[in-house]
Every structure is written in C-alpha cells, then in structure tokens.
Image 1 (cartoon, chains in turn red, brown, blue, cyan):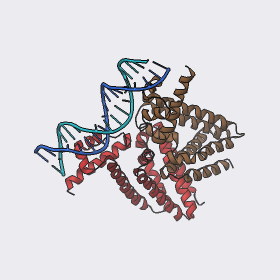
Image 2 (spheres, each protein chain N blue to C red; image 1 turned 30 degrees about the vertical axis):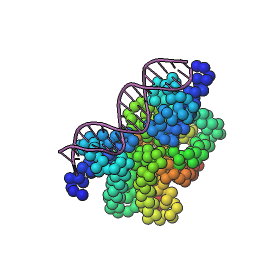
Image 3 (spheres, each protein chain N blue to C red; image 1 turned 180 degrees about the vertical axis):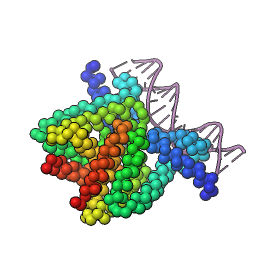
Length: 190
Length: 190
DNA sequence: GTCTATATGTGGATAGAC
DNA sequence: GTCTATCCACATATAGAC
C-alpha cells in the first residue's frame, strides 16, 4: 500500500476517532468524516467497503492506542504505581470526558444496541483492560478471583464516574472517584 | 383530555420506553413506535409535535417511575436497608441490563452527544438519585461532603458495572459489584 | 380525533469518467 | 487511485380527507 494511500486512510481514521467520540458512531456521517479528513466523499469507499468497516478500523486504532498506554504503565516500578498510572490517565482526560464521555464506554453503549459484530469488538477493549488490571492485583498477592473482583471494581468505578462526568458536563466526578480509588489501592493488603 | 386519547399517548410512551431502551433513541423510528403502540404513523403527530417531544415524555415517565421506586425504598426501616433496596433494584434487572444496558445510563450517554436540552433532562434523573443516596448516607451520620462522595461512589459503581454487563452481555458484573457495594455499606461506620 | 398519502431532507452506497 | 454525480432507501414531518 503506497504511503500517500496510508496517509489518507489514516486521516480518515483520525477523523473517525474525533467525530465518533464527539457525536457517536451512527450520527457521524461519512460526508463529515471525508470533510474532516479532506478526502472527497466518494473516495472513502476506496479505503473502506462500508461504514461498518470504518468502525472496525476505529476500534483497531483504539486497540493499538491501548497497547501503547499499557506499555507506558508497565514501565512503572510496582503494581500499585501501575494501577495509579492507569487511574491517572482518566484524570488527565477529565475535560474531554466531561464533553463527550469515555470514548470506549460511550462507543460500547451505543454499538451494543445494534447486535452487530462491532459490539463484540468494543467489549474486547474492556476485556484487555480487565485482564491487565487483574494481573496487577494478582501481583499484589491476591487470589485469581479476588484480583478479578478488584479489576471489575476498578473499571466499573472509572466508567461509571466517566458517565456521570459526561452527563453533568463536570469533571469533578472522575476526579473525586479517582481519589477514592487511589486511596483504596494504597491501603490494599494492610 | 379524553381517556381514549390518554390511552394512545400512554401506549406510545410505553413503546418508547421499550424500544428506545432496546435500540437507542435515534435508531428508534416513529414508524416502529407507532407500530408497537398500534397507532397509525401520521397520528403520532397529534400527540407529539416532534420526535424530541416523545423524548421528553419518555424522560418524564422515567422520572415518575423513579418517584415510585423512591417511595418503595423509603418504606424500608433504616438507611442501610434503603440503600440495600436501591442496589437490589439493579440486581433484579440484571438480565435486561445485560441485553440493553441501564436505561438511564445508555440514554444519557446517547443524548449528551447531541447538545440538545434532552440531555439535561436525563442528567436530572441522576441528580435525583444522587440527592436521595446522599440523604441516606447523611442519616448514617456522615458529613455532607462525605455523604455526597459516598453517593457518587455508589451510583458510579452501579452504572459502571451496568456498562460492563451490557458490553459483555453477562449479568455477573452487576451481581459481583452489588455484593461488594452491599458489604461496603454494611461495614460503614464500624 | 383519526388516518392515508406524500412531501422533504438526508445518508449510505454506487457508477463511471479521468 | 481519484473524484463527481447520482441512485436509492428511509425517517421526520405535513397535508388534507374523513
């Protein structure tokens, strides 16, 4: 695939990440996508067979972005610091979450109402996060089932607080809930 | 307003509750609504000026349903029992949550991407729940800010677990998180 | 109040020239 | 590979008879 071609395809995915987060998948039109990526509408179909294919590429992108973040967190010295870095990522994005919600959470909520296979793709993103967090809690000496419970609790609280932050358009909910989660992790195993 | 008229309008709102939860607001068409309520399409506009007006009625309905649940919970003897009843409501709905998510959460997530005033209506539902829960925590002897933090934590965890349950199509997340929340409340103030 | 037929706008997708 | 023009399906909304 030529590099110019990669470029346009990549720009379209960039646009999808931005616009789908802001307006949702179904309400984002291919015309808007093309416009934002400075690609003529008809040409979009050279890169993606259908709109659904754009959705797949979008989720792929999130998947690789997540891999990058995971590497960054794994650079932390110990599990508690890694979990802290995970939480901090949400706090860092508090303003964008207030505007448009958690990108994964709102996408998952939307696509799971269609019954299509795009829904399964988004849940894989959550599954990866759960598996990573479970691993950290296991390293803290917890049994598999306890570690899993902790991971579910962590992700639930973050996603729920993101939903409230989005609903009220106020970052304070993720900030407050993050503090609580940090204190919880700090005191674990004492 | 004649009773037959009330009937049809009410049936349309019933249909909206069901279909919007299942498919989302934007993807639910007025034709589907009319069909489900056994009302001819054109007649919908006698009861609602626009689709947005259907959305308002839908949220009104949720608001009054919530009032009814609140009364039920308030019948419990003490704050911990009331909070337990609140949590139990989510567990009771675990299967429908696995299918279509939390009705309020997914509606809020969807409508907050439009910037319209329907979004503000949904956040009022969350605000009511937060205020009620805060009140219960205050009755347990907590300061206003601590009680508010607890309320945010409770609602966040429930909404987040509902999101995971919906995403994976598996009730276990709300069940597990509810157990954890119940234990947390049981041990509060010890 | 009720219902049929239809106007109007929009969005995904395609045809086909270049 | 690129881009214009357009098809077609569908959804909101309205007109107007009954």
